[in-house]
Length: 232
Image 1 (cartoon, rainbow, N blue to C red):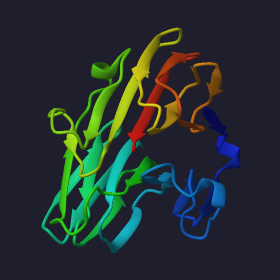
Image 2 (cartoon, rainbow, N blue to C red; image 1 turned 180 degrees about the vertical axis):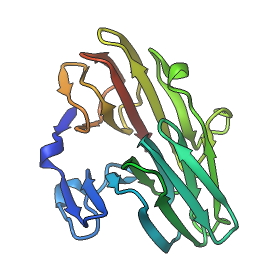
Image 3 (cartoon, rainbow, N blue to C red; image 1 turned 90 degrees about the vertical axis):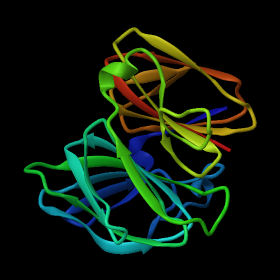
Image 4 (cartoon, one colour; image 1 turned 90 degrees about the horizontal axis):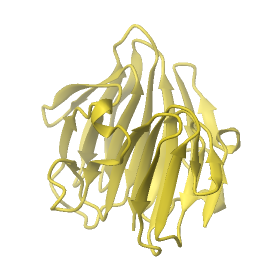
């Protein structure tokens, strides 16, 4: 099954400094049919105005992955971590027993991010944060694992959950396959461009909720950048 969730159908909010669209129920947006997808709880599509951002706030027992689509995000937390993550790159935060952090756009233009929350396998671990560059060219024509809860995927940022986050860049006409366990839950969003997932056309920032399949073929109908979560 592939369920298309067009961008125009997503919930959201406009806070002035933050324009947010929610693929799943979040904050004041609630849709009982879109309250997570397996262990994937949140996929927010955020546009953050220059010199603004999320002031210090706390999380616990959640794996939070930030994929930067445009601009850059600057992170700081109460563990002493500070870092700037640029477009195409990824940061992860394992909230564990609790972490207080802030995320700012200190750039001259808008920053656009996907923020993805996944339930952890276990609770009560020590919090942590990390970031890593993933050059788009190294994902050309194929999926590359960006964050993973599987120990053998050592090139990816570690997360404490039975899931992986992948990215691919495809030129118009290129295709790539991804093998799935039919019992798992995949969610795919083009950060840019238009693709066909099997027989379903998915435009930029649309969501495709996938389950019950053992393989998908993603074909770029125009130059595209794709993010995929494979979750329990």
